[in-house]
Length: 294
Image (cartoon, rainbow, N blue to C red; front, top):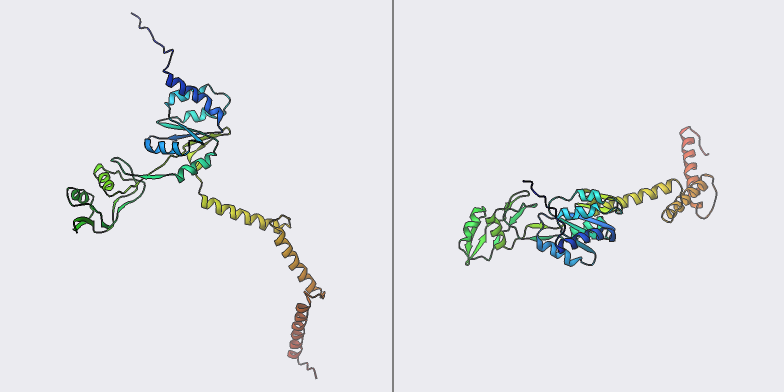
């Protein structure tokens, strides 16, 4: 007996609405950004949504729904390349903010969250010395397991010295996460990263979007100074080079006037001084050869 193949002809209204949004949103904004949110906590995504709701529309939709919608879009060049990057749990962001500025915004809005068992730390985690404010009890075993030296003083647990309990790349255990939480240490840096962005037919990868503002500022300053030097050397007048060129021309003219003994209020002193120096040199040479003024 042949098995009848069933093909779905309708979808839930919610999924239909999301599909329709994926058809319309790419045409309404200049930038489509994609962020892998596998390790992004829901509370964090909610904070970003709330803070930037006027400028950024964030959608977390099943990849297949998005891909099917993107396949139907022909007038947004490059969207097929972005669709190809939809793997794992992704958030799509629609905005008119430049992808470079968008990445900077997210960098500046990173937060530190309490650790959970299984988190991978990106930075060194240190428990500082001093009074923890925690009363002695079973928690002492947690300190001992984390190799944190302690003492009891005035009814509370004191950490004897600054102690590093995790280094970059370490897996945080559930017990260590519990201890850090008790001490109100929030070591997990959390933030959204733009992994890919589409703007004006071009798809930018994460590394393309990272800008070192300090280095960028220094590079602009260096380029500015080099361009002024080039303009001065080639006698090219601009608002920035004019002062340097006039100063250079003035010094050259003064030097030429002195060499040609052209007397003016600016050159008289130097010409007389140079003439005296030359006369003294001639007198010294004559004296060396036995000539006498008498």
